[in-house]
Image 1 (cartoon, rainbow, N blue to C red):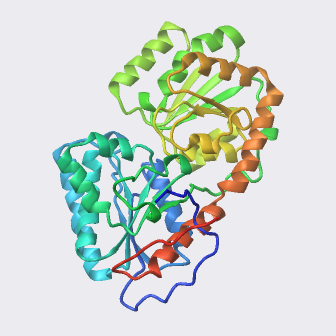
Image 2: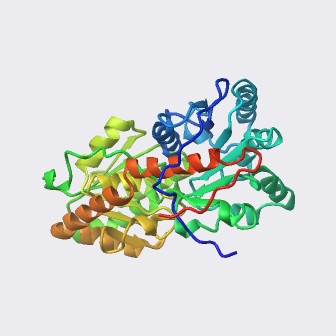
Image 3: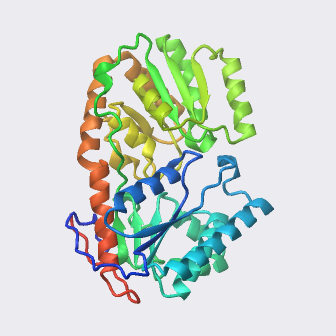
Length: 399
């Protein structure tokens, strides 16, 4: 059967009332702090569904910081086992109709996910998996035969596999049946309803980067582009927000800044919370995020909502978000020359910058608002929960 990429229906299906002693959903995911894409995704999901479905949440947050994510050490093993035990308690005491898991796309975090996925399967719970990245297919194909078997067993009979866009609609091929794949783009609240780029009066253009400060996210590429930007346009500022997670990358960044005398042009503000994030988006004129591996980054949606033109890469679902030469510019990951050119273009062409920012905000309002996300995700849950619990199937979704 040919996969027909489709969005969750906007038509919500009435759901039978939950049993007195049961909840509809057991939602597994982290809360902030630290503030990152996964904590935001979980918080938004809870907010979108809390008035429609009864639920209980297992908070998997690691308060030690982003640098601990994915490490294979005793602390992380014990941390995962604790969450596994808490999950079993909730499974027995709340007996949820469905278990929702935001799955990882690396072997160690996925094994952690198996502490939830396999008990849910063995107890015949309906399982909904949600992928917020785009590299699961590569992870699956590149791992060992034993790990591939574990992956198929853990999620192969999931009632629904949620992905972020049509670009990655085939990411579960060979694992989850194609008719059970559903596309639900991210959506966020409008933090900038009363202020957009027209209110900015920066004499010096401000570029903004927000994300984990690791090479894969592209912050070093931004730094490598700046010497030529400095030579061509002179006046600008770049604000980097996020946690420095790698000592090696930190040393490389310091070396670039020192070698090219960029100290007066760049500022590192560290990890930031929601209020500071909104403030920095309001200060900025251009959002730059040349990441090498993404799903559908919330930071780009936030930039679009703020009315900023976006410079990003052709990875994951970013080309579905950013319309090249309309709402921003798309480049290939690692292409420093083109990155430099696009930064200079937006710094020197004020009318283009404003026009792209306005187009991006209009696109955000149409496609990526929180209300649109809530309609789509609730439709998915409604259809899953109204199916037979031991043979759940997501019917055809149409937009």
